[in-house]
Length: 562
Image (cartoon, rainbow, N blue to C red; front, side, top):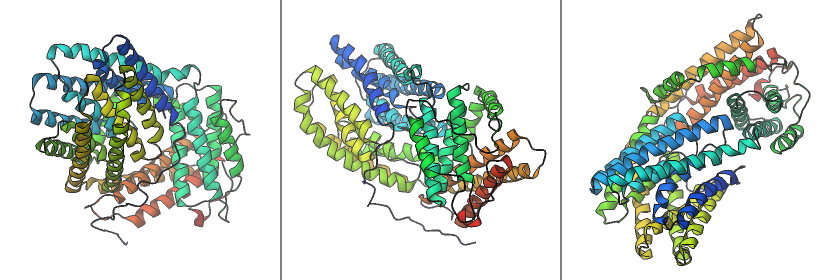
């Protein structure tokens, strides 16, 4: 077996700043955070207490989370975000009230950033991840504070957080199955792309999208007529993925029809009702039983077990968290040593750099640098307008709040162009400061945070990325063996076959993700690339055989198509 083991990967430059198509639902987090911020901000404006905006903003920014999740799951996720934000915010406010030592505050900020990184990565809480937590708590650490003010400020944060929860969960009242419809449409589109151009890349994209669609439907709560139709559509997407004719094209899968179903599913009208896929039973291969089983397993005890596994020996989460701790602390201390008045900016910049591997961290560092430096120029142009009146300042912050979420899906650097002036304008609520000093401090902190943060990422190795690949290979092999035994067992029922197939799909998605993360990491063991490829090919052959046994297809897969 041949291994590829470069000590250092080439770091990308061309393409890192290239703009992408906007995310499909970019406007939802953008509008949500504007609504969640506008109500408390305007209320404080009417009371002439804009100096309290920082505390309500801590809760308002929780509205950025959970927009890809079904509403039942979203409600729990955003609640966890609010509670996690409140815990970090309370620690920051208490620390700010009991000590004025910059060195101590930087240490507390770095420790909080590392814990928040663990929390977001271990629970896979989703975008925008730990950066918002670090931004809020680091700013609170350096805000003037008295211990007697902490309860009132925490009450403001929690009140704004509760309103954010209502904003993010509220659309369930008029578009109950919206997230599930979107996930199903993405699965249909990905399957259509694979049907038109079958290769390893499109196959993995389709498998990931179909797995995400099933996870969305299973997490959505009790089945409704609309969700039943969505389940049938996902079965058709699976059929397109699993059915491969000898000539390399997909039998019975019309890419145009799959795209039309996806378009209709995204709309607010009736869900398409195609004929049942061949062999589909009324229970859709036991999805009701699987849903009931997942509900039984989704208790607090199981959630704790999953979290402990994510943090146990060999976890790839811990080295990245250690990078965050070291990098944020060093960035803050270097910034303070240089005499910058806002060292927490360097800390937050360093926290934003750390991604799943070193190559992605480099890309984020470059994007952050470009975005922040352009952002301070935007701030210089906008500050005269923002200082016309307090209302103008509120409206400018709301505008940049919306612009940041509208642009960040095109490329992170473009979103940072809006985030930077927003963060600087928030300081204006506590009193005007010299604009030139703010611009110089933010530019210097950006360079310090990016430079020191990335150097810390290089110094703190993550050899556990290879261990994750090994575990994913073992899990994929076990799932494939289980599926093959189910296919060979003439007495296996529909639920057994479907459960085995979905577990194999999930293991292949995890295997590809683990391989991609490890491929961009430095200073680690060689990756068994041939073994990875062979495991993926064998896994997809078994998926096709399982689908054939279930009746999704009557044609065996072609060897060349996997």
